Length: 104
Image (tube, rainbow, N blue to C red; front, side, top):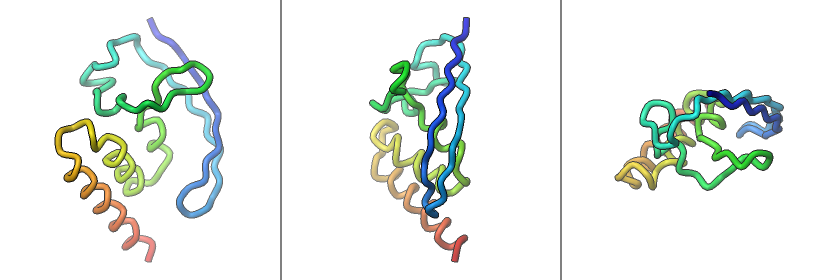
């Protein structure tokens, strides 16, 4: 069994550009701790969809970003849930530094 949820939202990226995205999220009804489809460190956020109260996964947000920025957000998002928060925050900073080098 699957549930389908679509949501349209607008966000401003780090460059000040505004984007409107529609996310269609089809997911098999699996335990939210499924290590393949819903690892705990991806579903641990308290952020929820305002329409259906489904937890927002970081991949839903970062899939619309470039590689470096998306990875930085993923590492920061889940830094308290993988066992080494300092290392994950350092990785987030590393990706942000790579993005700064890229745009210079």
